[in-house]
Image 1 (cartoon, rainbow, N blue to C red):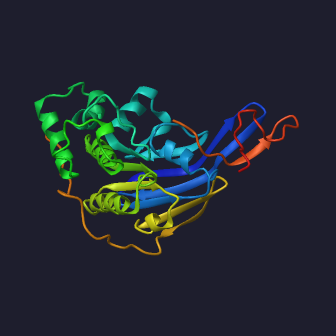
Image 2 (tube, helix red, strand yellow; image 1 turned 135 degrees about the vertical axis):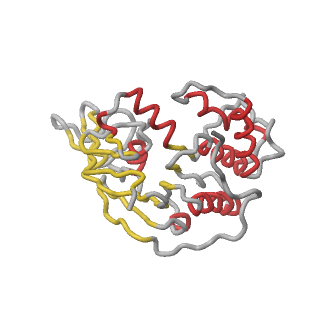
Image 3 (cartoon, rainbow, N blue to C red; image 1 turned 90 degrees about the vertical axis):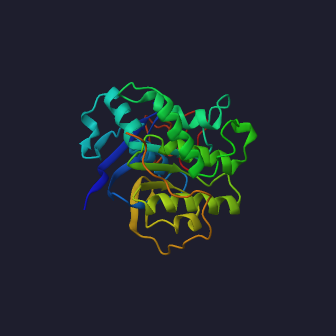
Length: 277
């Protein structure tokens, strides 16, 4: 079994002065190539912290993160940034599109940061156009985000995530801002991508969405409490226009685990965050 990624005994602590937040406490898991994993847990369970580490946006306090066979703990910040750009595509709940850029320009953004310094030429823009067409946006290439619906903006984000042909797609609540019909369309795109061999790691609160994954990983208080086959996998009706993605041409912390008071502190770090929730 070839692994896309592996985490070994991950711990992540945040020292807030008066309190120490143990966001992850000894989490281990393997993610085979072609897997589709739904990461679930209540607010404060550690799932967003885990996603940040899986996305090479943060480093664990202890433990190992093996990405594409490489131990990320020994990589420099520059090398970690480069491997993140090459191997991981990100899809966010809030889309994170650049408002001044067109659909095509937003899709091309990750190409600007390639390690080879090749930049964005005609062939690269043709590839971006192909991706836009594949997610059903061929008639929106020159539109800006404010001219698009939420579902269309998320399709732009999916195309952007694919532009460097990554091994892994990380999706953070990809349907959180969408209505039921659009949610089904976006999930079908992710299912199609997974069927083509892409590894997808997705954080979600929604059991109906998680049930479409091949596997679920549940966190509670920074620990893994379940890791197994999803209870159901339903093929959703209808794909987006042009479904099927080919290959291209030749940090935030929002989760907290247990709170440990220091010098008699009560767990309130003064920031307004309720770390006990």
